[in-house]
Length: 311
Image 1 (tube, rainbow, N blue to C red):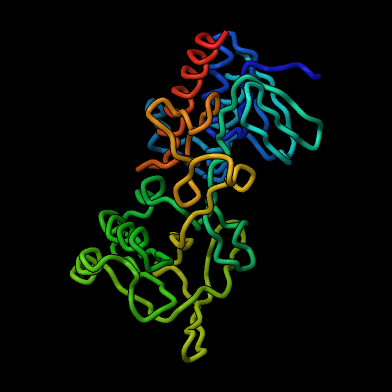
Image 2 (tube, rainbow, N blue to C red):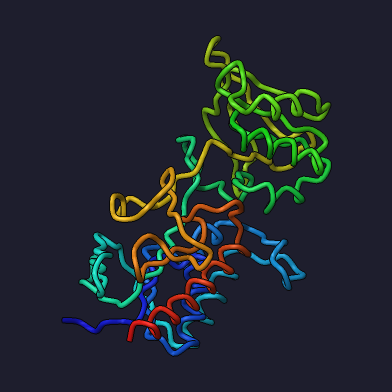
């Protein structure tokens, strides 16, 4: 059998890299498996300006690289590969990848989630370049601007209201003629003079060179299309809130979940002994880089205690 690690971490977003740093620093043999680039969703953000201690905005990709380098300096190993299957029950956990099967006494799941796409051309190109999924992260960049929110559920309407703290106007684009959000949230939106609506509408296409400059919106009832541009000729600001997709397909039916998200206790422990989850993949009230990093640190310390207790 191949080497058995103390802990294998699945995913190299901020939660996984934080867990790797803390685990390796505790002298645990640590392997981080990631199929993409370091930083996860964070790497697609042009500027992060609300991370404590970073007084100058930093690109998400740069912050991800810094976190990865820290984990590596403390001894964490990194494998760039796709995970095909996970067997998490039993004392030794098995992680099957394109590059072979790896074994560990404990596993930390940090696969994160991803925004549900609207499914139009160029969507990926404009992520972090006019197309955002986080008002908390990017709302302040749109001071006194006219911005757009796509969606009609609780999150979309709540975030649209939150955006009015910065923007001069927020237009909600919704595919139906009424919102799906709770009535109390709807009432706040309708009462806010800064909030406007484009009913029965969907985004057909996104356009621009380096940044999002325009989008074509179609009325699903009339078939009429409208090209939307910024009032002041600046790049568009569009916030997408039609849901997220937790990356938990590989562990479905193995672990306790709630609507696709992993249920943990305050120590990040899941329903399986020796298996922990951290970051956006778990049930939690706030999904931010700072909370993901905190989760990762807690998970690693919990693994250290688990291994000590189960020598």
